[in-house]
Length: 253
Image (cartoon, rainbow, N blue to C red; front, side, top):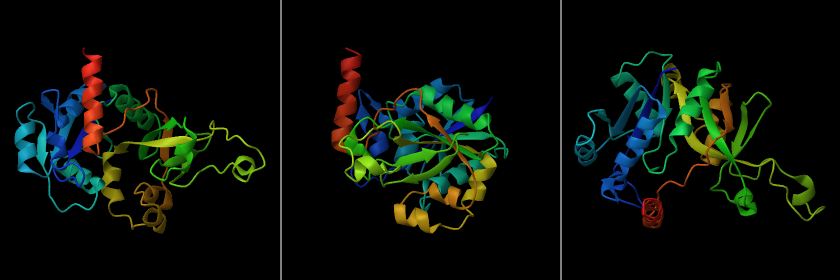
């Protein structure tokens, strides 16, 4: 099985300006992500940016960097441009890895690619078990429910599935076993990425602010299974960045 990894690296970030270039133990964050992705078994790892500063920094450690347009409305639109620029075959598996995950587990990249490869679905993703009750009720922790064949049934910021007994007060403790949190790593067939951006926006994705609901709304399957390795948190804020630096320093001491 061959697959390509694409890492979008936008320069602008409201909470952490110039995020891809944030220094982590002497390397820009995007280099950490790139090096982890290269350990996944991908045939090619490409960084897609919209800013000359990022392009120049990335060019110091790899030639696999593309300049993409600044006016994309979503990460998937940027991905579609990359598919065109690389002239990828429609059946090529493309894994989209976020550029703000310097602690990325390479095993999860190969897992999601394999999950897609072994199915006829156009798209695949991963989840993790929810271990804290507060995450069940936290709208920033996106929940997902799936069927017996590893097809996602629905993604939501609401508490799904709804445990009637526990949540309506008939029993005091909430069993966390059924709850899965979605992990934002996706594998696509290259041809579907171009189809996807032509699909009409769905009312569900607008309500929940979850782009993947467009796929389910239009009747396509998304394969999902639990990640073999629980992913570390990504970097959104200066506090997140400090945590990652501390983690790396303590693990390499």
